Image (cartoon, rainbow, N blue to C red; front, top):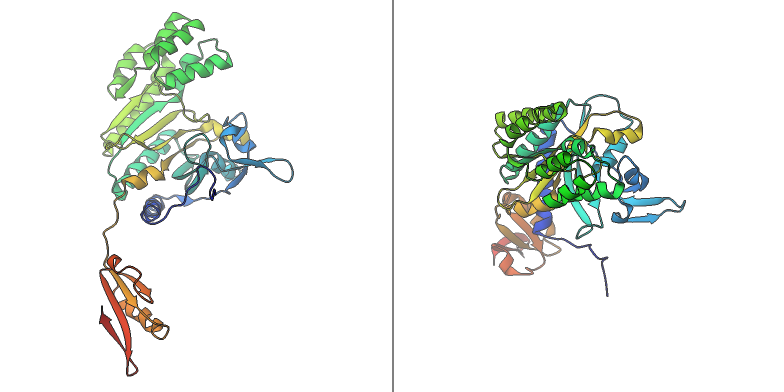
Length: 375
């Protein structure tokens, strides 16, 4: 007999406690940095995520038809849902934080826990640096330590790819080849749809990642490309802010392609040094708001809570005490709790498993008086 749909799971005990701990530390950090909390409905119309401005795939969502024949989905993305919610807000700087689940069918599992931030109407460098500085602060307070920050920019690849005459299929194949770092494939697709010079430039981008010193190399390589030099200058400014704020592990990937259709501009990811796993990702998505008729400066990032949970150590174990009470001594047992403010106190009619407790106390009524006896 099947009790849960495929991909769903029950969780209990330590993993749930750690998740709430991650979320509580995040809530405290963002509240001290001036963020407001925001929550959006779990159910949304599919068109919010599948329209031409967003481009998410319907087959990757949890969906059904409602009574009116419209397709509804379980929230597959926080950024888009928040953009919808903020599209009618005043045109002024705003900072929001969220925490909750997203649901996707294209990866193992169905429900994924996220926490993150979204900022609108904030100058580019200020919003981007705030995103990354907040991330570093949060990870340190969580006890995870610093992460390795990787910076990229959507317009580097797209500026060069625009010089090609690509069909829709070829454009997607080229983007995927660049994403997968398949240098020969990038070169062959580009050469077949443009000049050898552009093909060579795109192929070289596959290897254009590593330490920040690569920026200087490409400033010389692109000395006649004003558009690309401006992007490199922007990246350098962001790197300088991060370094001045104490961030040391910074990488760049000049050939990175956007991992979300709506990204436009700076992109960033955070890697855990111990495992290389991505713990957060984000970037700029100014064009996302065009579907709502607005021109908005927008940036944000999201943490993978499930990844962070694996990094959190169990909190220091408190003394566990079992108080054995009867219906006549329940009220007294509640008063007795105050004598153990730093312990975990469990009241039972009898100890279910003595080995799980450091101490077992029994309330005994003798001659009308309650006495506490250690068992």
